[in-house]
Amino acid sequence: MSPTIASVVIPVSDLAATKAVYTTLYGTPHTDESYYVGWAAGDVQIGLDPSGDIAAGPVAYTAVDDVDTARSVAIDAGATERTAPREVSPGTRICVLEDPNGNPFGLIGK
Image (tube, rainbow, N blue to C red; front, side):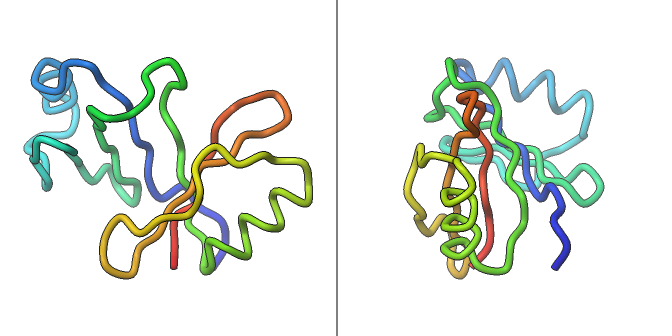
């Protein structure tokens, strides 16, 4: 799999108000839950996360075949771990790392 941005997750403090804005851009969300609202924008998923860290800003998730391997390679290259790998749905795992400047980036895969 070549690296592609699979998802951008945006932390929000007011889910209903923010959902209204993104609905004008992307239409009716495919997932509309109290813990996550999501849309498909082409091949990229746009998600609103009311539990996310607003101060940290949005996180772009790169699709990878193996989260653990990609995580290790990134850490060896100088990234640091913000959140450890965890399962978010059956067969899908994510983690969030930081580059040396403190910018977050995510990995999504198995």
